[in-house]
Length: 156
Image (cartoon, rainbow, N blue to C red):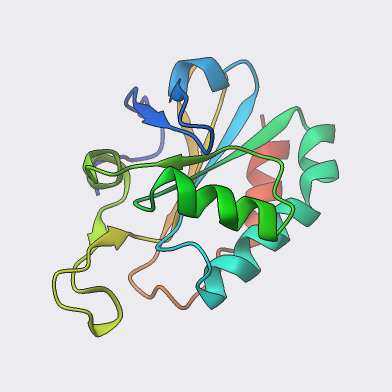
């Protein structure tokens, strides 16, 4: 992982569920939670993203938004968003380059040789793109510490 607290998050351009190219800079009008996840429709990712969805009123009160990023394609991400009533953007890191820059990847994910996914990670960015909080796990079965995310958002 190359990002550390206080560094500027690298710009990116990724496709959303409507196959529209989106850039990090367009999200930086608010505090931004970048949530990297291994895969749509997996158990822990579904629990995580439903928890983030359920926390949106709290995040909105702190002028914050959520952006999800995975190596899944736009069609899988759209189905995942629709199935779970997710109203925040889900972006497709098909080349895995953004994941590698931010948090790294899991190789041979869940024992599937050749299947590489984003690590489960959360980055809280201020409006200038500075990393104010980060959490990356080597264990894809662990959900992020939601209270820490809220605490980080309220600290700036």
